[in-house]
Length: 406
Image (cartoon, rainbow, N blue to C red):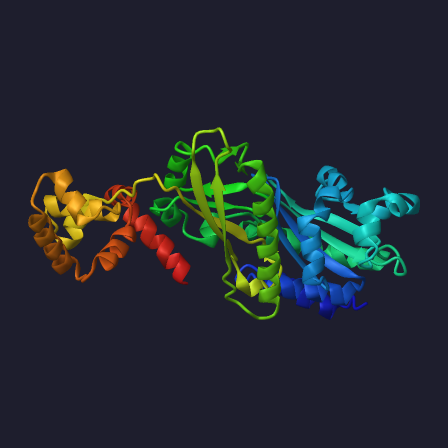
């Protein structure tokens, strides 16, 4: 152990470095571990709004250990209930509540904690608020025994600084869609998009996704959870777990741009009204600089419902490209996949008239072919974005863009 004043001063400096640099939490935990020894030092955050484990970072914790805890063992950890009841001024030492006979029979100790060399745990709450609960824990092996008194005293001297830094940087420990991707931008995307945790808690459903919920029987939200048909839900959650594992391992190996997507094709049960829905999903990693730990990644879900018509904002087409009312109507019908002959029949005009109007659309939009034009139309902002801009939302969106660029 190194409980010197020099070590204490270094850790205090690192604690306050976290206010400007999130990666400093890892350096701080490493330094604490070097000072007090033991198996590992672990910091956890529970999102207060969703009750989910949202943050996990540590010193001397391999990525697989952290993932095992996140994906399975947090749910049978007998210490969590005690920590929930613990005041922010005290410590919870697990050996005072769970003796050797308990540890010999409980699967959390036998399957997870002891095999990873962490029989003894001493933990304290750094912060407990409606937004988040943040916990610091020190793990020690059976041979090392409980946390020594001098190490505990050293940590108690550090606690006020840790608590202050956590409170000032509390947004780092909760699921903030603003920290991951501009909330306003996601909400204005044309495609139905949801951000969910790897366990299915819905963090955000944009306007298009909320509209989708009213048109399909294959997805809905209940008590803040994404609900899929049972035969698809298990596969979805399993793939989310696999994606999180791959993302964390990729980042741990220095691959900072690990992009992997999955798809789910859902159909209604036999005998029910026919319905089809496609879900495409990937992981969003909020802070690659945190390595394989830190704020947990969220799942970004894009939905495609074959019967959902794509709305094209005619006002935007006119303002951006100078399209006439008739040209806007043709562009919208092309975006819905209609061939020119069908458009002419529906509008009651000659095919050549529609063709000439299409050539005018090409010229005004600087496109040359129908696929190119349709791609442009499908990537235009939705009408909701125009309403936001008219209402002054443009300034808010500029602020989000500026924040994401820094």
